[in-house]
Length: 415
Ligand SMILES: *Cc1c(COP(=O)(O)O)cnc(C)c1O
Image (cartoon, rainbow, N blue to C red):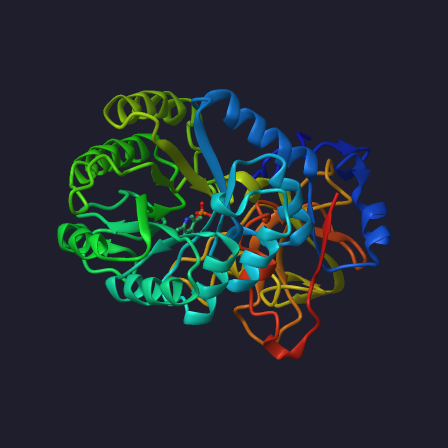
């Protein structure tokens, strides 16, 4: 009989030994012992480094690649990334502190996001972190605070363009948005900046996330570059050619679900070569940045739970695990998303066994939404076996309702 493979084969960036998944060269069963048990997230340094090396080998050498801590703020992982990337993007005071504790210089830590408090703005200014200003009111608050304390302050304006990133999982620009300043308001804002204490040095764009379509990303970069060039032509008072930094955003996605095809990074990187040349021709010496989260870390992480009960209910096999949606909201289906799809899942200590058992993997919560795999063909699993959810390095632990049902938080290991 031919070996049955899982219908939704996970990414194969992880090796295996005998029947056990290897993470960072260590068998998963041993790693679980080392970590003090399940449930846990494991992030593989070798894979994190390999992803950045690949990306760096393809994009222009003078394009700066920033990592968005929102995707995974684990301090050890952020420390590892600090040696790989050119900068960080943070979205809270705590993320800012994590970033400031690394070797990245404060001016290459950018602080984005709506709803920054006065206290957070003061922290950023005092640290010399680059604030991406999201509204006119935020700009005025920032200017007042900077002036009061006499801290030299450079800022970038986040633009809400009149286009978005097509075919994105999440759209973050175009139309009315809480993110960025509408592009049509920029001339008036630059007039106001003329009399301000803070100095504006450039623009930030971020129009969407989780995009697997290289053509859509390239179109977005083309439009963003042209918009940046036209905005850079506007003066601030009598000052011309004041733009020194442009952040073009990102939105690179990773494949999660059956049918998803990985982003063709070669096509995007080739286009970025042209985009950076064009920008630097028109705006000499401009620093060009992109910022990525899940693309850099998502595929380097797994979530591991242990089967603590197995039951058959009216013919359907249930594997009940010691962790679920409380640790991995996204894999469970984000609180009942309209069409739930399975993340790639395997039995981590039976990796090469036939996937010939149709099973539903549920977590320990008293909610039908606590689901890690819905009717998937998996290797025959028993109590004590390890269930692995792949593509879990981003938007896992920190993006899950850890307190739900007052259960314990999840451990995280960087290996
Ligand atoms: C969320 C976010 C990112 C990272 O998104 P990914 O999909 O993880 O790459 C980058 N920049 C900004 C402004 C964001 O809000």
